[in-house]
Image (cartoon, rainbow, N blue to C red; front, side, top):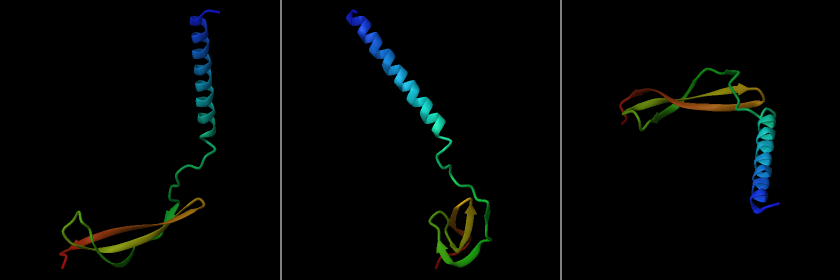
Length: 85
């Protein structure tokens, strides 16, 4: 076998391994956990005030609890604005 043949054989082997790994990753990606989507969230509750740097005013600070599958998390936001002191 010539040097050109060995290089070509090595490249074909590398390509075959890369294709196999790509296929295995694609096939197993369905097994890994996906990002959770909220199945439901509680209503927003006021918990104080905050001053959002994007808006020139003091806002109501709110939170709510969300549940999606086996995950639970809290979301926070600034709601309405008025003048900051």
